[in-house]
Image: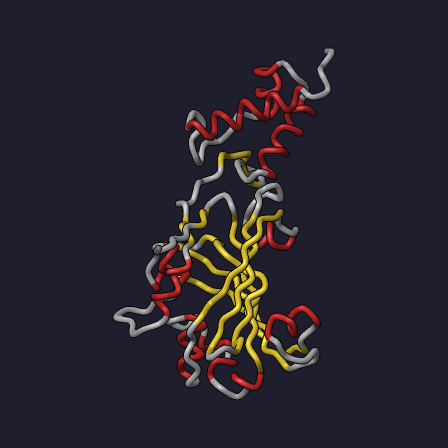
Length: 253
């Protein structure tokens, strides 16, 4: 059989369109590669290449011993700066900015965490406005909404603010009110948050932890949290899958 070299792109385009229009519904098992090859008139090799494209885009997933399935589509999450307002005051029920914009309850929220004491490198020192080598608490989080990994972050606090306090103890995570609530418990009142957002491709580790294809772009956010003109927390980066989130900001004139 003579094949055009890029015939697999035609197959990927057609399957992608069927997934996006709902002709192939989330959770549906795709036909075996042999049958797809017969349907499209191409070889098994080209079918594998087409499926690999869709897998990298996060549209399908392979389950060992079961086959290939159309991936479930998580609800689109809207990310706006005013989400931090939920952290700034008293709470009738436990929540954070993440649970608020993910639209989940506290019981539907889970957090993987890893804490370490490090010395600030040049980038971290510049973001904090401190000397290189300053002692910092590095906290790495993976945020889950209803069991699905939805966000990662590397959040850092100055040892001079938190060492020896409950904030430095991972057993207290997740903490209602997030960083703002933690700092407030230490007498530090957050009065400004600044974020810088970029869009990039995920690292292999990010793709694995977030359960996305390596071809799915992510939001990469650097956050600086201020109190009385001083940076008291740096998150660098916050990583959010771009296929399940939109950035939403408002300006009042």
